[in-house]
Length: 640
Image 1: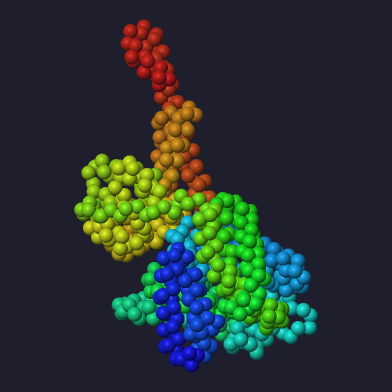
Image 2: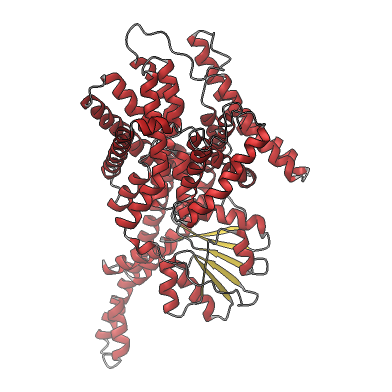
């Protein structure tokens, strides 16, 4: 069947995925294992339905490029700053710890230290495609485990380029010069300085072009109101950036990621995600099938014990390294262990780096084929390992059945509340007490089970889905209260709701001031910081306990609120510029303290004057012998 056309080959790949993935999902094994199994079955070592004449692998790898572009669209500067510990702290510690453990294991088996260190660096990389796909299927992409995994994977993807420069240095002395990272590079014959300059220039083109040129182009295309042209433009952008990076010898996937980062703050971000998402899922599935098809089963059957032992050792060492890295940066035990198990496989970039180190004479071809088989088997084993961990080790209290779906029969609601936790409940009770119709949305199974026992009619679902909001009556409601705990999803939700329901008023709960600035980027959104009023009242009561009068305590709280509202507006344009914002924030804090101190001194002087007048009046009353008016005297004593 090797002589069949591309259409026949495509039919085989698609049929394999369509048949195997639903079966794997039904068995609880996940779609990734289904794709890998399909690839093994149609590969040259089983049914031999696909041959080498049609190179599907290079097309399938475009799925990884699209994946990293979509990841880049999520990486806003505020998110990078918030996740800096997970990316650069935990990510660096995991990479070095894995390289050290694998290198030590290689030395124990008599391998050269250079070969062991190179193997450790290559195997330290995990599969971005498999991990993120698994997190999304389980619905924990936005949770603590998802954030920790995403941070480490992001660092690993960024580390690929330095590895291309570092790994050739591990070649024995006298070895021929390594080939360029991408053999098709147009710069292969240029001097090193010219190559570096061209690479930096290409990155600058992507950054500057993405920031200043793509937005007017997308505005022009959007004005035509042709969805397919906008989708074509989005794909053209990804393909163009990937091709540019490949031509200068850089990773196409890293170039796509960089393009996504540049467009993360664009108003077209959500539209780009929506248009490209279907291609990502299809091409990633094709990529997994090609990985399974290229698994050398003959090599596995010749050395089954060695490969199984290597896969087991790799999973154990990567789990240990990731767990220690997480705990080093104070990640809770449960999150650190779950993240470590999820990242315990080899990664797709290992296939690229293994071919590179063979050309650089760091590793011989036979060893590279053996490690390739280990990586492929570890990727195939990932769904089984995570499923076993969840069933045997992880507490299963989170894996409850979805609550019963309730119909939206409240009629046309006045208010939709997204997130019915400790914050949303208080606001909702005020609304219900004033006879407003409210629809409650919550995506925590445990929270819904508790609330329904107390008689609350709460609907289960992800409130960031526009179809769910529309079903709840958002097109007829007057107000949307966003009180979900996920900060990034809250930002995305208000932007999507504003676009889909322009007449709907939106109030959003902000985690802190930084989160509030992200939320107000969407026009017309009113924001309330969740701890501001309670902390202000907390401070007012503390002033009372310390002996200040009710008048001074209340005035201090009110004045602080007024000053904060004023400075909040003044600092809004600087949100996201860390240094300028920090300096302006420090100045505003000093200004607030000076205003408060002056006002408190004025009130204290007034109270002292009033107290003196009261003492004088009290003495005059007592001297005049007017002791018979007891209530009036007691009032004067109180003022004194």
